[in-house]
Image (tube, rainbow, N blue to C red; front, side, top):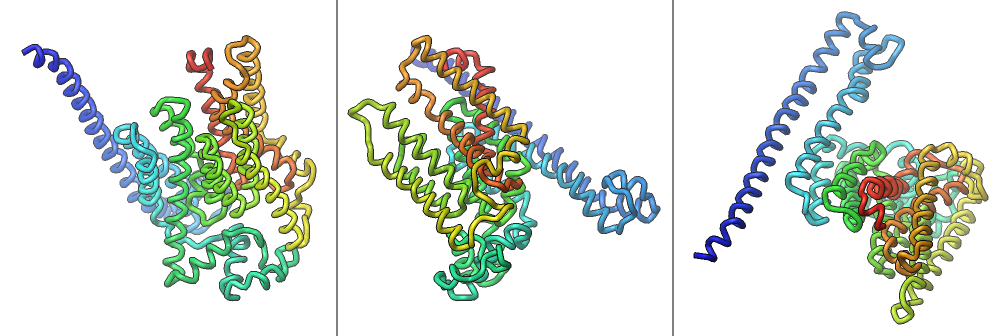
Length: 446
């Protein structure tokens, strides 16, 4: 009888939790149904509204909606309004639905569950782009190399001898493994359509992997709800969303760079070296991951006690950094050296970095964190070794962002897609400082 009485409160608590979850689930489906109905009505009736305005020659209204000045064709107005209004509304509504779904069903989910959910979300909301071909930088970049390799039976010795893009040739990334991967997939795919579908699905999968890894890093320093919100901030960023749709080198390079830093944080040093090496071999900025792994291995070596120190990971990561320099020299020798718009030299890109507001914000945050660590040490709250170990996770993420700025300050090109490698690490820095400021216990106790 006593046992039954003692179990009664637990049973009531379980029933209350079940009812609360059931109410959340019902609310989610009702809200989702309302939002999807609204989205359906917009997508169904906006073309008719545009057609009506065009037939009435209401060009003032159409130009106001499309931010245009001259009269254009009906197809122009349809496409422009879809880009400026309907597309963003569609992305916002589907993003809100997925965010609500995650907080109802994925709050305590494992990393691979998050990855699968993000992949399904990207597939369902972007399935229309699965057969879109590459364009822009991708078409004249890695695809130029891949098509040449495919047409010449993967003859790499001959490929390294052809003219580079500097003289109008097809050779752009002679030291990257990515064009070879594209060429192999082109060869085995039964058609161009199948190839495009596979590559877009791979891009979705890599984007999903980045989100799952980013959440896993955040969970090391904050609770699961804040980590989930942080991962959605990354997923909702326009640059991340656009690059998840493109067939290009940035997303795989970011994925393996983040894998390298995640392995470093978990002190799996050889795995970190392997992931950093793959990121480097996909694209040159992977050197940032290599350098961070080396610096992290040095910090771990001196932060650990003498009995726990391992010098071999430091040597291996150091060799990896030497390989970065060799790879850079080999690439310049093959393509014929640097050019003014793609130059690696001292502070050649500083004028580009210093104009970025987020650089100065990051610099202030990094200085503030350094002062915080100095204050902890000065007050003798912790020894230097303990400080390094306690702050190793945020330290490596902030360090990677700092190395990105350092590298690009010495590189004369900085276009939007290059910032994708910075995005997870910079966003982590911002989230972390807000977490410290607004979480009193975290801010006061470190």
